[in-house]
Length: 257
Image (cartoon, rainbow, N blue to C red; front, side):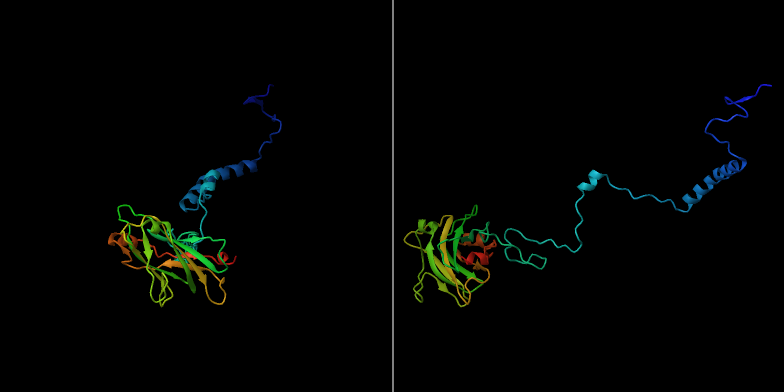
């Protein structure tokens, strides 16, 4: 009697490597398959479906900016904020060479290798504001935040070209006056010709530190605010609209030679 073939195999024969499931196995498979739809509906209905957090691609993650600590303060400083509060409990840094680069008048630090210990040289420079007439006369007040003594004042090329002079005060017979607050007052006036003062160097001033230790700590100089200090009035107005009183800092290292 010939054996019947089922799906290409003979009944009663087995394929190599395959085991016929027993009755228990068939019952377990049937129960599991029947329970899957119920389990899926239960998970979806109860909101228990969990998803892994999505990670950005490696190239995008590298391009993300680093997170800043929440307590990090960003100082608010610009080119004219020398020694002013920076909004974070400190003070803004100062320009290494000039007090106010964009102002019509500014102080500039001069490095003088021949100067003695504790001696500081400052020069006064001017620049022209577009559409504003040049000054002809000036009253200047310069102050320091440490005890200093003005030793010498020399005219720069701009004042010399305009035939300007420094007023000599009768009380001291010097071209400057030391005020009660320790600042120094200088008057620039015209000689026989009333000429404009061209942009450039007005003055060079040499100071000496006074006190117990002439090289202790930094010192800063500034042009004091002095409304009406320039003539004509238009030149003075242009000056008063700027931060020309920004200090010029001399670090302590510049005083120890």
